[in-house]
Length: 254
Ligand code: ADP
Ligand code: MG
Ligand code: MG
Image (cartoon, rainbow, N blue to C red; front, side, top):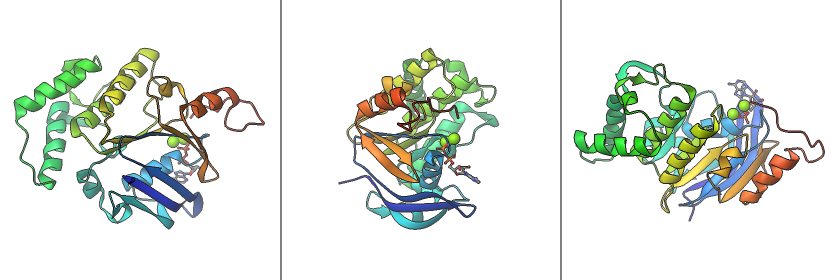
């Protein structure tokens, strides 16, 4: 069955209908790319799944692992294995990155009734993951994202995901603003995360991340719902033709 099941989801922001009868099924092990023009509601979808305030669900349902996801508090969603990079603070001066990772992980473990992780064990596994993404270990001892470059912040987002080991990760524009080397490192981290019991939703405006992380499905958000779905080849087709088949213009930058 599905890990995430979205049926006829309708969402308003400040009285404006952004999502309208959106359906999406995500099974364990699958990677789904959500594409679409700027302003099509991609981030709205991610934010609703994250439980951000300000989004009014006016119809439909979202089930995660058989439960009503929208009825869960943000912390409960995280404890049940839903990861949204942006639900974590952007910058926390005074709290070192390693301290933050340790606190976040142990808070999840506590909510699940699991024992705290041994500090050395955690440090070893974090360092191994950083090595994979060629991240400077010095970043562990700086304030969370404090003075991090754009690429370092994105890598750090993926590091958080790898440490917290969610069952469903939703990444919104993780590829934006990255140079090709940084993009490859982030992609390596994402590919390391992929497993048959984990699912990923990659929200992206551009297909270039998908050169390195091959999705099982590509969906295009149009008029508030999934207008088209296909395999990885759909992303390449969109790259060529743009989102509006008649215009032939490249999608505008977010
Ligand atoms: P995308 O991520 O695909 O670029 P968004 O989900 O960010 O699209 O935005 C979809 C639509 O919702 C846009 O028209 C945007 O202006 C509107 N929108 C999103 N968030 C807000 C908000 N907080 N207040 C008002 N309008 C919003
Ligand atoms: Mg946008
Ligand atoms: Mg967006």
